[in-house]
Length: 177
Ligand code: AR6
Image 1: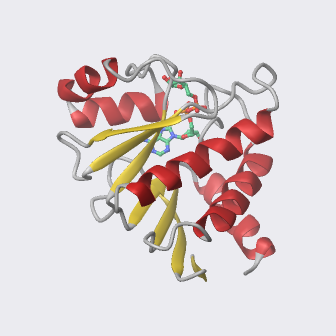
Image 2: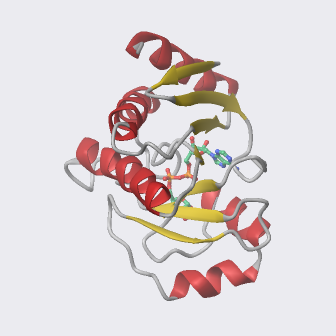
């Protein structure tokens, strides 16, 4: 499903965040130490190879709501933007911290002259954020932040399961233009 917003395409697809070769940057649902871990972070580090851990070591730690950028190493993408989402029920205010991840990631992409960014559903796995409210924050924050990021032409939400994709599609349809 694709919708246009402020001169950018918003897409949502079912898939693996490491298999998005047409995007300038992919976003990592990282841990504070920027180490491999499980889920998205594990998949990204496996695909990127050991050079990514070495580069991350210089940037860690990061705090909830923050984003940092590295190269893509062996990934097909030029950049990885690492975001630390809130642990649901622990890091507060959770909604503001999650929104900050999406905003900071897009601002970094804009500063680096990137035109396309793919996001996973940050915090909705190990960190336990319920998917639907997380999807609303993701979609609304991306839409609002695009106003200050004229260089960004495509934002893709990559969902792991069909159920997660259906939820994002619903949220994108509801939030409209
Ligand atoms: N591509 C796209 N989405 C994925 C993939 C993938 N390859 N793998 C999982 N997902 P999570 P978090 C979905 O746990 O909640 C890590 O261990 C998954 O179904 O990766 O922010 C880190 O080291 C879920 O919907 O991220 C941290 O310690 C979403 O991506 C911690 O987990 C996010 O799941 C971060 O937890």
